[in-house]
Length: 294
Image (cartoon, rainbow, N blue to C red):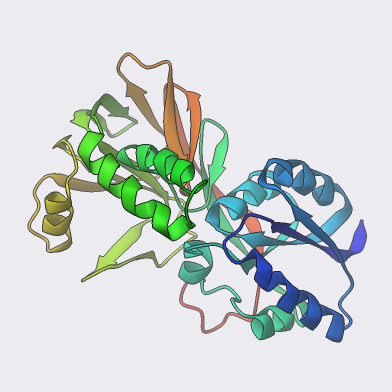
């Protein structure tokens, strides 16, 4: 096993050009690393190859890129470090991971690791959440428009078209304690539980509860009005649950379906089997006595 670090960067990440600042800082500190800047299509093969050779992977990109790394780091001795070079970087922010050059340098010089839970659906790992319905439809449109516009600009027509044209699904949700039937346009499962603080703060405070968060619109289509009503606490059409055991989601008349994994749309078989994977990912971080997440 190579004692140096594999530094893997998604070339298409929004802030990928900032990697030059990291490289300069690493060189100045004499950090021994191997650098891989890859197209999205080559990301998985590069991660798989590096896991065989390196103990520490520093992966630069957004949450989708980190999810790809977690897929292959799960339940291994590989230590995953994150360079927040994506659009949102929810994962880094929620976990209060090292997010700037100096804190990342400190984490490398005085490494501490933590183990957190992951979740999966049909063997596909996710670090944040997975959903079906309106969000995968939005993600597909966003990825299409991103070919022609800046990623942030691609959100505008994607959101407008998705709210206008999204449909509903007839689904059943089952496990030891649940047996629900819904006709809905929004269903989401999270890796541990989100909490909401008015007006827009939505985050997880604990990544070691081995729980699945379950969120869904009880019936009908999602609209901007319904979203505002929920944020104001006036909606009775939105449900939040949790589960410590796997859940099975069946979609009527669907053998395969598009779902989202940490913001990226993928297609998988039905039914959808969601599970938690407790303490399965080793993360590189700073000393964390004062970090409320651990």
